[in-house]
Amino acid sequence: MGTIKQGILGGFSGKVGSVIGGVWKGISYMRGIALSHNDAQSDAQLAHREKFAVVGHFLQPLSEFLQESFRNYAVRMTGINAAFKYNFANAVTGTYPNQAIDYPNARVAQGNLPAPLNAVASSTVAGTVKLDWDDNTGEIGADAADKTMIVIYNPVQNQAVNISGLAERADGTQTVTVPASFSGDLVQCYLAFKQNPDNGTEISNSAFAGAVTVA
Image (cartoon, rainbow, N blue to C red; front, side, top):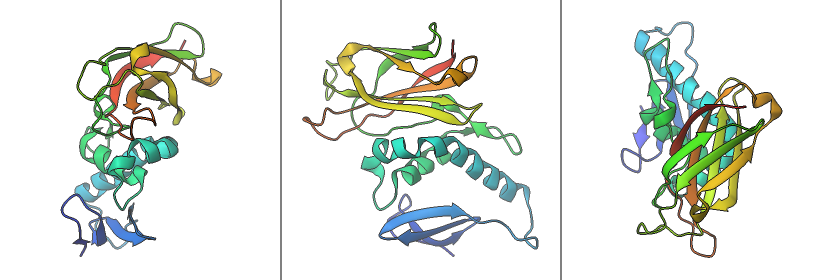
């Protein structure tokens, strides 16, 4: 039986269903447990394992980015574990055996800074994705110098382009170069903001900027 030490959203120790939790060097972690051949393979167990795998597959190419983008929620756990917890609970659609990431509801950054407003992705130039958004600097807590955090995720190749700090909230636009191999693939696009280092360390929730086929 698992023991929760920090409330329902905290880390846990021991086994809960097909997930085991523990602490390594003061950091909480969780991982799936392969069922033995003697375990009953109920539909609920199989659905849980599939959901675990779907979320892990989506987050794997974002692991380095997530260390920063979820840092303010990674209390005694890694950034990727904090991201996993959110997306496991909120970003999976469908039923076993056809569960998948619900991309508009997925989150690749989380925080209290005002989120991007009306973010939209497009691709008209080969090998590039353009993101546009409305400058909401006047919103409480939003600063013109807040820096962009962008994810362009390619589900076909399970690869992602992660870029931070190359544009500001007030710019309203940024063009991202993606690998030539992305051309013709449908990619999922996300935008968040982080404070200019001179102003603080807050990060916004990510906004889904849409799915677009790369030119």
